[in-house]
Amino acid sequence: MPEADDKANVTRNYGIGIPVETEGFFLKASNNLDWGMKDRLSRIFNPKTGHTVMLAFDHGYIMGPTSGLERLDLSVNPLVPYADVLMCTRGALRAVIPPDSGKPVCLRCSAGATVLKELSNEVVGVAIEDAVRLNASAITVQAYIGGEHERETIGNLCKIINAGNRYGIPTLAVTAVGREMARDARYLSLACRVCAEVGAHFVKTYFCAEDFEKVTASCPIPCVIAGGKKIPELDALQMARNAIDQGAHGVDMGRNIFQADDPVAMLKAVRAVVHDGEPAEKALDLYQTLKSEKG
Ligand code: 5RP
Image 1 (tube, rainbow, N blue to C red):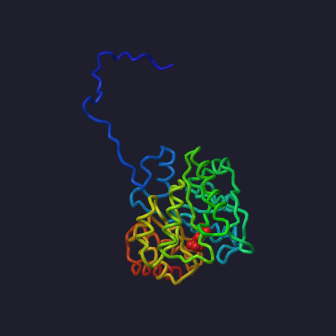
Image 2: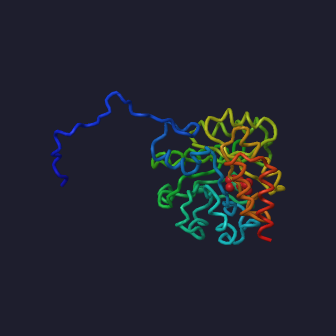
Image 3: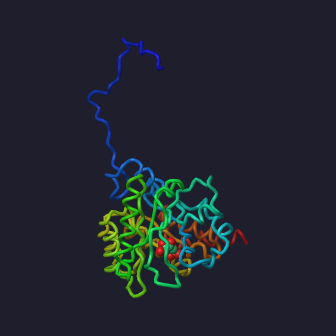
C-alpha cells in the first residue's frame, strides 16, 4: 500500500497558467490516430527524417525462390541491421529472422495466388491474432486496382484495415498493377487514392517518370515506392532520389537491393539518398567504395 502523503505543507507545482503542450505528430495524415498506431508508425518512419527504408523480401509467396533469395538466411540476415523495416511473410520471419534483431516488421498477409495463375486472385491468409503474436508493426495486402479481382482485393484490404484498427496496427496498402495497366501518374494516383480512402495508413506504389508529384499530392497518406525489377544501381538510386524529392516518404525495395552485386552496400547507398538527402551520384560513389573495400 502506498504511504500516506504526509507533506501537506509542501507547495505543489500545478503549473497553473502553463497549458499542457499538444504536439502534432510528425507523419502526414497520422495526427488523429491512436497512441498505439502512432507508436508503430514511429518505428516504420524515422521521426527525425520522416522517411523509411523498408526491405521487401516477401517475393517468395508468389514467385517461389526468387533470384537472390534462394537462401533467405544467407541473403537477408546480413541486410537486417541496415533496414528500417522488414517486409516479409510470417513463414520467412519465423524461419530465418532472429527475434532479437529489434526490427519492426510489416507483415505480408495475402496468400492464394502464384505467378503460375491469375495474380489478383488473393485472399487474406493471416489472422490478426498471428500478426499480434508476431508483434507486427504493420500489416499488408495488395489491392489490384483495375485487375480481374479488383473487388475481392479491395475487400481483403478493408478486412485487414478493420482487423488492424482493433489492435492499433497500421495497414500498408500495396498497389499491384495488373499486367495490362499502364504505370502512369493517372493510374497510380487513382490506385493510391482508393487505398487511402478505404482507410489504409500508408501506401506502396510504383514510381513514374512523369508527374509523380500528382500521385503523392493527391494521396492523403504517406507513399513509399517499390523498386521493381533490378536496374543499374545508379538508376535505382536516382529513382529513389526523384521519388523523395517529389513527395514520397521512403522506399520499400527488394530486388534492387538483394540482387545487387553488393546488397549491403546498396542498402547503405539507398539510406544515404532517403535519410541523408544525398544525390544519386554521391550515393553511387558510396556504393562503389563500400563494394571495393570488400574486394
Ligand atoms: C509485390 C511487393 C513486393 O514486396 C515488392 O514489390 C517487391 O519489391 P521490389 O519490386 O522492389 O522487388 O509488394 O507486390
